[in-house]
Length: 202
Image (cartoon, rainbow, N blue to C red; front, side, top):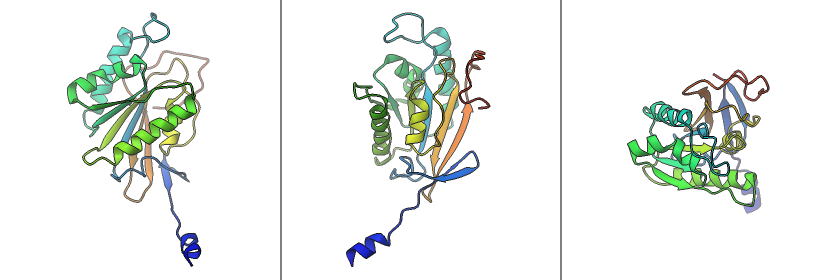
């Protein structure tokens, strides 16, 4: 009897992204707050020093300011970054203005997939906290699109090394779906004829 009842229960998770829909699990929709929003960006431009853990260049710090401007009309209460300082620096202007709660999810020896899963789990946990309405996630060129997918977005190629302006907004809906908006912010990316990733993004 119990087995029949369990088999009779279905969970419909749908994604609406760029006017298309596909069934996929969603960390955003799983949040306690059905209107949870998540912004995912790559860190800003890197300075050409300290190659293992560089700070941001002047262009990168200008992008940090542009990110703060882009977030001004959004209810973002938390920031998720890796342990590499360029991710937190990208959010630093926003953090200074809002006193947002910062969560560090390190990239470990377990690899990119484990890091992305840990980020998605962190976003899900934040969504269960009363009063938390939005999360900014700052990632890397090889993690941003994977993070978007882990949160319920569609698969997409990794960002090129020349791409810093990509901006992904995922907004949970009351019916369990997620709406993805993909745009850009700040200065335009440098011309790169070798880059075909995310071409056509606005």
